[in-house]
Each structure stands twice: as structure tokens, then as C-alpha cells.
Image (cartoon, rainbow, N blue to C red; front, top):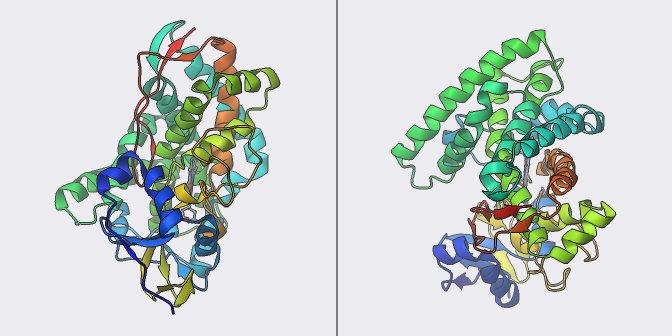
Length: 391
Ligand code: HEM
């Protein structure tokens, strides 16, 4: 007989923030679909269930206009829409991610920016690669891909953080929305200025693609969907790059293999699998269903935990280990189905330019033995710092 989701009341918010992998390992074993009492959400922790929830659009939807996200983003974004409306907004920006742009303009820009940022690192000594490398790379590169102009480079992390904090403002705290409101005003001013510019001087950027489409979206949608690309790309690009570098630096044999063979792509994919930068995505049950004997009623908001799906023992051996030599099984860090990330190949394009340049310039680069690497975050996850010695 089908049952409601069992309640997991062992997990605390602190456990989710500090070591979500341990929480999900236990849940996958004991109750793969559970309501975590501390967040009052049903979570799907197995890879097959996460795959189903992202691809079975008859049973699971994304549309929700009651969350703090709509308030924080100043509108209803494509990420929380379904069906034809979602597809139309997605299509409006897809041209910026076409292969000819990826292998053409974006690859060239990634190389130029990687040269500049790596060239600006000190010749030797201790640095934190988060602030000295990952932050400027993500901000410089994505400001160009998004088309927001050089004046926005220094604002992107502040805007992204205001959007993310606002979207997670479950208590609708007005002080938190005041911060996202200010960021929204700045972003809208920036977009409006750049829209005028891109109309007369189009390029391959996301903003230019949307503005110069034969039938452009309304301004409100151009603005909110640009904010998805800021709130859902800047922090994740920084975190994914640092996670992968930490994996390599803490496994020098694997780093040596990459340097010797030039096969960096396995490290890029393994870093994404190892610690998913966006750990979980919400879905709303549209039609009742029973999964693993658990009833999921209509209207229930569930969290699809891609961070756990990527560690499912059904698919991976010793999933907690960073191992570039493991057999390739597709990870879920960019999601699946109609809302699959649009920027995955943009991320890969940047990192493919950075890695060979970084280790060419610093062949003896090592983790700082006096430093410690700590990961934090339940929804968005990455290292808080990456101290290294440049040699
Ligand atoms: C490593 C970096 C990144 C990660 C881990 C990541 C992850 C994700 C995930 C998991 C989703 C799906 C959310 C869901 O299922 O509801 C998503 C959606 C999206 N991502 Fe990314 N992302 C990254 C970088 C980027 C970049 C660089 C861009 C743009 C330049 C971007 C643009 C988008 C957009 C527009 C969507 C919404 C797609 C839709 O709703 O149809 N992302 N991302």
C-alpha cells in the first residue's frame, strides 16, 4: 500500500550546509524519498527519480509564481514557467549558445580573458584562487557572454548574491528584498543602457540575441531572464571551477595525468559530478503518482537533488571520491529535460581555456599545505577559498 513520504527528523540545516553528501548517502540507503523536517520539503535523492522528475513533464512542472523568487527577480522568469511559454522564452536566447559561437567568438574570448587573468597572478607565493582567479574569470567572461558591458563586471557577484538571497527569502523578510530591489534597479538600468547599444551594434551575446530577435520578447521578460543568467551562472561558474581545481590539486597523480595528456575534459566533468554547484532544483507535482511506494500528491513542491543523484551508488563506485578515470556516466549537474542548463558548454569553454594556461605558467602549482579547503552551502555549493602556492 502506498504511503506518504517518511519524515527524516535527524537532518539539521547545519548538516545540510556542512556535509549534505553524508545526509543524502543515508537517505539513499534508508529512505530515498523523504520529507526532511528541517526544510519541510520532500527530497528525491536517487538518480533515476531525479531524472524522472526533470523529464516527465506530465507529472512534474516548474511553474510557480508564489515563491520569493518572483519577488526577488522583479518578474516571472523562464525557469519557473512550463510548456509553450517557457519554450518561447528559452528559444529567444538560445542563439547565443549555438556551436558556431562556442567554438568561435566565445572560445576566443575565453582564451583572451584566461591569458589576462592568469598573466596578472603574481610570479610566486601564496594566493587564494577564489579571489585571484575564479572571481575575475567568471565576471569578465560572463559579462561578455551576457552582453552587459565592462561597467557591470565589478557588480555581477553583488547582483548574483542579492538575487540568490532574495530567491531563498522564504520568510519574505522586507530587509532582504530591499537589497534585491536595489540590485534590480541597477541591473534594469544597465540592461536598458546596453539594449540601446546592442540594437545599433549587435553581437553574439545573450542580451543582443534577445533584443535583435525577429519578434523580441517584452522588455519585462528580457530583463528577468537576463537575471536568471546572472543569478544562475556567475556563482556556479566560480564554484565549479574551484571544486574541480581542488579535486586536481588534492590528487596530484590525476593532475600529472592531465598535464601529460592534455585531456582536461575528464577533470571538468568529474568536478561537476563530484560536487554539484546547484545541489537541488524544485519541481511541483502536477498529477498524483506513486514512486517507490511513496505517494506524491498534486501541488507538493519537491526538491530534486542533483547533488545526490550524482553520488547514487547504483551508478558510481565510491562516489565521494574525485576520480577522473572513472567510467563516464552522465552527471545531472546541469539538470535535464526542458529546463536543462543553457550555459553548460559556456562553462566548459571557459575552463578548457583556463586549465592548460594555468598549469603551463605554474607547472609546480600546489595546494597550500597550511591552508584548508571548506565547502559550504545546501542550495549552491562550492569552496569558500582555495589557498595555493604558485610555483
Ligand atoms: C557550472 C556552471 C553552471 C551550473 C552548475 C548550472 C546549473 C544549472 C541547472 C541545474 C539548471 C536547471 C535548473 C532546473 O532544473 O530547474 C540551470 C538552468 C539554467 N542555466 Fe545554468 N548552470 C551553470 C552555468 C550557466 C551559465 C554560464 C549560463 C548562461 C550564460 C546559464 C544559464 C542557465 C539558464 C538560462 C537556465 C534556465 C533554463 C530553463 O529554465 O529553460 N547557466 N543551470
